[in-house]
Length: 71
Ligand code: SF4
Image 1 (cartoon, rainbow, N blue to C red):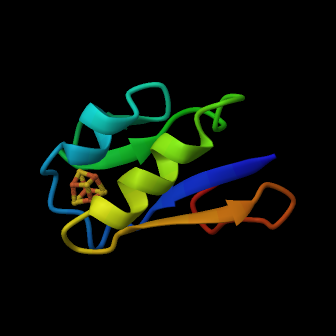
Image 2: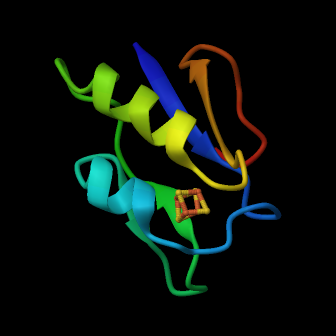
């Protein structure tokens, strides 16, 4: 299973990823995007779309088995 990751130092809180894949991203209390769920079955394309449309390149996708520094 893949999991998305938002770099909080890069995210500007534009909300585009939340609009694209609300099942995975949400705006947190700091006003920036965070990943709150694993990428659901069938949502991989949407998450990849969010990655490519993020204006600051803040989103990456990693294998869930690799520890993330914000996990
Ligand atoms: S699209 Fe990028 S900059 Fe916009 S909220 Fe999502 S992660 Fe942040």
